[in-house]
Image (tube, rainbow, N blue to C red):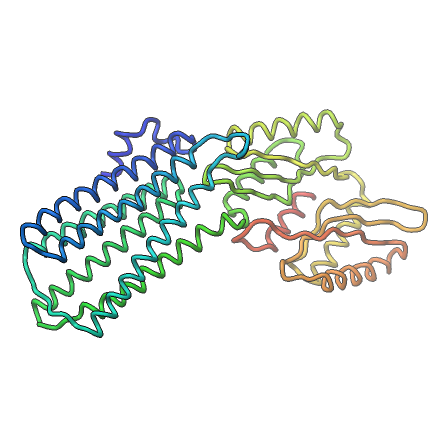
Amino acid sequence: MTQWLVKTFIKDYENIKDRKVRMAYGVLGSGTAMVCNLLLFLAKCFVGVLLHSVSVMADAFNNLSDSVANVVGYVGVKMAGKPADREHPFGHGRVEYIAALLVAFLVLEVGVSFLKNSVDKILHPQEIVFQWVPFLVLLLSVSVKLWMAFFYRKLGRMIDSKVMAATAVDAAGDVMATAVTLISLAVYRLVGVNVDGYAGLVVSFFIIWAGIGIIRDTARPLVGEAADPAVYRMVTEFVESYEGICGTHDLIVHNYGPSHSMASIHAEISSEQGIVEAHELIDAIEREANRRLGIFLVIHTDPVDLNSKVTKRVRAKVAAILQELDERLSIHDFRIVEEKTVTKLIFDMAVPFEFDEEREETIKKTLEESLQKENPGYRCVITYDKSFFGGEDMEQDGKDREENER
């Protein structure tokens, strides 16, 4: 059903990186959910008036209020799809994260409200009356809401949409809430035991926890999170695939929405390569990154000496000493500068995030003492940096950097 809706109502549906196509997915999802909630509202209103059932009427207006989340999702996706302008040169993609946060608070509101009602039912039990028509109406509601949850979840995964994922959780919360009512009615019908309040208490905690999870996941890109390992590999492998690039490091990715990213990276080239030639190479890579990866990429060039035997030998010695001190340490941008009385070894060292200045200074002192046994004039000029991507072992990242430079 989901695939049929996508193919029917979205032109060029496979091109999800396109801003207009992505916005069409959001409109389809929000519009479908609003229609479903409106139909549920009308059906339950009809049954509620016919049977004079307050509970069915209350559930009907709950479906009407669910449309608020759909409207938030619709507005969020539409605004996020607006092109860049003078005030927002990187587009409006982060509006979608804000919309997802609003939906998350709606989920929390449902969970807290359900919690209060459940506690009230435990403290003040109410007699349950089983009727087949309201039972079947609620069963229909669960079926529709369950489909909506899966529908939103699938669309959200297809276009990496936080607001759709949040709305899927909102629909799943409604499913659990209504399902508890159905189970309570069935248990009371079969064994005469009222478990409504206790079952609702358990479900309310699940809904609240889901809302907190949405807030946590949505807040990360707003606060600023490390680059995803898959994006890290994609960008570094893309840049390093060009002839003339010896290696890369210090990739930073700035997220301006699910389909709006800017990145900067250091690319190592031979120090013997001409400035004009190097500039043309970097320009070409940046243009292709924007066209093929959809990322606005800025590349900083680091010249490296690939032919000096002395540089290679000293660099290897520095790397070996650091590996003995801590196998997570790695170096890049290594060069030697000869002065009158000292020989400066200038390089960057990647260190774990837990390293403080005192520990870094201790490593530098130990390293210099070891090197000065060979040459008393050696002095280390170190720039310490930390990994800007998450989810992978830093040690492996450092080894990859060193392998690239070799």
